[in-house]
Length: 364
Image (cartoon, rainbow, N blue to C red; front, top):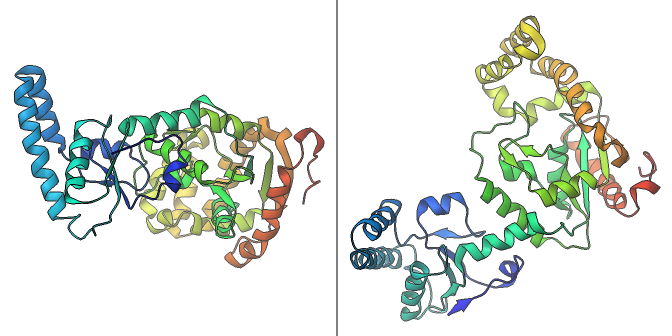
């Protein structure tokens, strides 16, 4: 039984009990349907061996080898992770093109009595919808950009806005990167395709009549490129700028970069990479502050000397898009909690009137 995916939002409403990725672990690692579990019918080496036999030796031999391997692997899945599934269980199974791998897996599941369906066109049909949403057509949602200098708690505010019911697209969270020389995280960044999948599925799940809040970013987050349709609408969108005094931003730094505070050697090594920009004497002074545990001091220096001038230069092109500034005196959790409701109202009103009719400070 085949299931045809006509839009990304179908996956939110289709009602499948599970989505099974029958492809190899390497294919799954690159990208997959949202929420899919990996139950490969051929492992990486098995898939390579079958392909080699198919090309170099015998198509018939490759099909026979593949069939034996597929049946053994599917049997292991049935006896293992699928052993406790009830009789009415309804999974969606897919492979690369919706061919033999998912077809065989789905057929066996149906023979058992489960209500398995196979994705028409496989992963490729899903990927085409992602590409269409992020490359081929404009993003339809009203976007408002939350901007502000480094360490103005933009990410923390995004989390609070989401918890308060706002529609938030957290690009740094999806990219596993905080978007600066100090932004790398312990978890490696996803593949570009997986990043795009997460963006497209998040947008597909949002109400198109309500604004979506996105943090101001460059066209890349770490090594990942913001897809062109989204990047264009971000460049054109109204912006609300969050501001705070330098002392408050420096005090916020340890909570924004706990990994650097916990690993001074790593922090110092990253600062060393700034020697070409700021000279040996300045970098040595910053490294000395790190060694002394003066993280607020080094943060204040980095913000004032390195980050703010570069941010101001990069954001100058968007100055006409700024419709409001939302100032915080402090950036402690209580202050952020107290200010998020008013910020939500500011962000929502920011998309209600054309940029040409809205001056900075009119919405506050």
